[in-house]
Length: 127
Image (tube, rainbow, N blue to C red; front, side, top):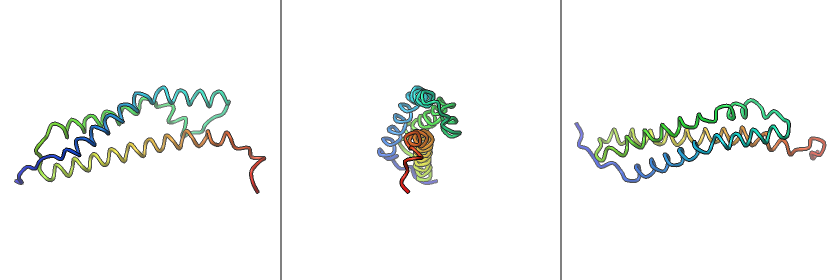
């Protein structure tokens, strides 16, 4: 059995930042998505399958928030960990941050591409 090593303070700070950001976004996302739905409705356009998917699941973001809180609790409760567990903590945190970035990237693309298309006049495009 390997000797425990101190869990890095940086890992704890990054997990806390991730949890805070995910909680703030999850709390704000339902009203933001409803605002986007109103924008599309006011223009009388269907934003497409991606945007409808995102707008129909405004509370799905709490999944990321819950995962980040669980990860923060796991990291915070252990001040001494094995090297293998420390590695698992780092990998879990990296995976959560990547998943969060991909999810919010998908939202941004799904919402903003249809909005940008609203401003394009197909009769006025350069040749």
